[in-house]
Image 1 (cartoon, rainbow, N blue to C red):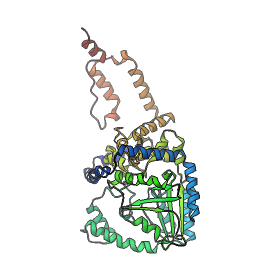
Image 2 (cartoon, rainbow, N blue to C red):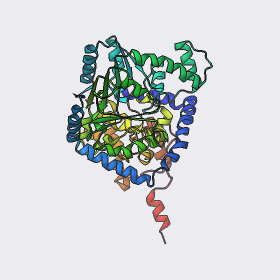
Image 3 (tube, rainbow, N blue to C red):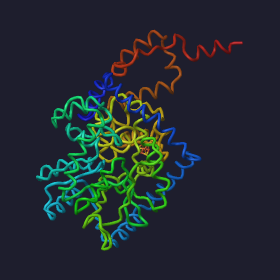
Image 4 (cartoon, rainbow, N blue to C red):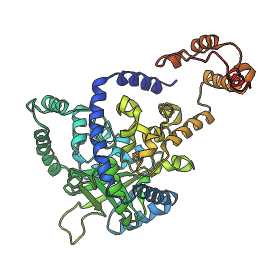
Length: 458
Ligand code: SF4
């Protein structure tokens, strides 16, 4: 076992027994569960809508090279600059280059999982640039020195008392502030940051090929402020976020909001197609879009795993997953947690190091059932397991155990040796690890053949 998998098991064991954590998560996810069915009512046929979205993403991913090139061409026409980054190092290098050119000391950033993936804030801080998260949930997490806990709701594991305590400790506010008062405190602080920042960084929910623009979805308006106040706007986005046409947003926007939070449509939906034009009064002087690969083309290579690139990061699979609800987001030790994280992380960050995530699933299929774009998540988890065996990443003991199991299962006379008491003794004695969190296996006293003969003896 790798160090990463041992850490995962140790953390999971602690978290799964943490009832306070479970209560907070169930409370917050419960609120979404109440709202999502209401949001779904806006679709005449929600299954058809999901199917259509999957087809659009299929087309976008199958023609990704052409779609991205068309995006670059169209975006450049309006004065935007596209930068292609193969990995996080290249993306960071490009951001720093721009920051140096703009003499940037302060930067505002809206919520973006890709910037978490490349650890942008750490790099900026190392280079003497203050980077402030402007999404309230992300701001809370930044104050606490923690990574986001959930891809949609970064501070899902905190209740209002936790946040009031955190603000009291870090910002000196009274300990008993209400959520509304806490929001106003954050708003006051952040307003000044927008005005002072030389550069604004955002992610993007969609890259729109035919008009050369990016679409950003949010509930607080902070992303709009982050991209319109500073003189330079940098978008960092994974290449899989491509969609062919502006008209596709008519489907993707309501799907994303309904499956993410239960809203019919998210409060602020912005399409940004370049820097401020000559006849416009608002917007940045310069706009860059960094198209990040960082392992995504590895996923593209695999005919089966390619489907995971359809993900629109709605977070529904996390909310439905019994494993996520018990062990929480941070336990995964990856940027993307929950079922989609367990599918893509081994392929983005290395099968050897992260294959254990694909095994941390009951394969109940709840994730597949709720996925906004009908990704067969549980089958992709199985596919990862298969891949890891094919790559020879299993231990000698595991290989031998399965060989023995296969041999015995295919050999009736061997299965019939001994009675239930003997089998219980041998198997429960051998598989101590299996029993650590489970009751003993209890074999039938009679073999299958004995029972069959008894049943059909007449
Ligand atoms: S895999 Fe599906 S359910 Fe999970 S975040 Fe992506 S789109 Fe949403």
